[in-house]
Length: 122
Image: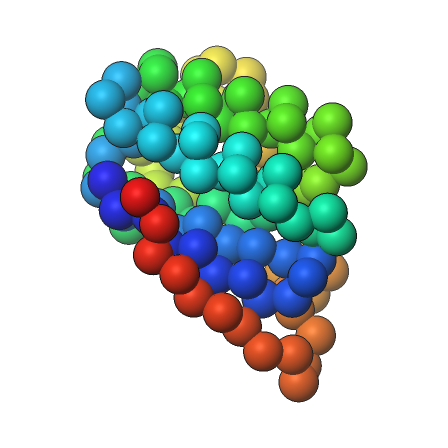
């Protein structure tokens, strides 16, 4: 798994995830997401970009739920962006699809004129 962090604004961060989210790699995502949440006090939106996710097992799903709990505690909105069909099926079967429904892009997009900062993590 490869993770890339982008800070769009002080209020919005994105973690781009590529590869497999499974028993082996899930702790790395949890550690990195937890660090982003803890280190950015002004954060209000955490986007997990899953467009390049190849596979997600039950451990990966469990980590998504744990990240959701952490974000909720800090009043940060978690977004699962660009979900692959395989993950959508898992979310539908488990009844979590509506729970992880994302807000419209216009509501969560960064303001124009603000810079971004990319950082590869992990």
